[in-house]
Image (cartoon, rainbow, N blue to C red; front, side, top):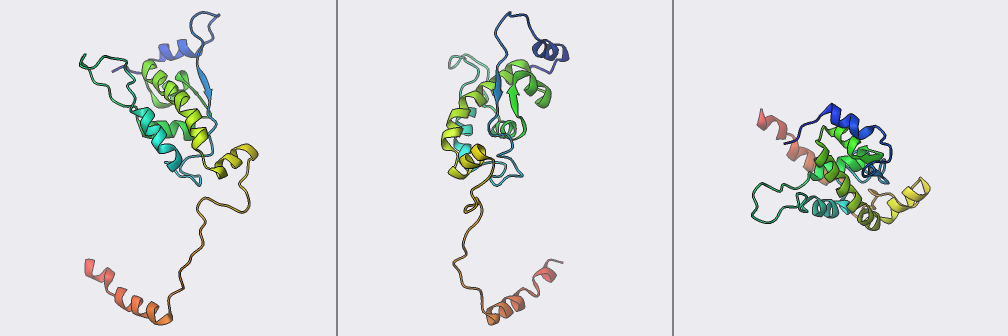
Length: 171
């Protein structure tokens, strides 16, 4: 397992003079729109199939039966990256999540692959919020109309009577 190396991190984050492959930096369009404090929650339902599928891809580029293990990427970490980071790059992932260079590059590639599919699958309300900065006034993600009739006073009294000993039995 590759460990975090401060020297390697510094080499990645410092500017190079036109040599080698340019650093891949992805703007996270979902930053601030998904996460535990949003209407869509920590694990948004519209994104989970996409993220789970991308996490299970073969990220190690080995032939079948060549030895070693090809463990999938962490879906929890992919969701956390989308929720917490405004810009995604290998250097940022190495610093934030203490990953090795190769593993951080795998996560960057996974986010890059997922982004167009996430944009296509997002709900209309989220699309409107991302485009204009606010939700339409007539819709909310977790609003609903209750179709049930309120219980009668007799039914409430019976329920209260039935529940009176509930906490005492456990003690």
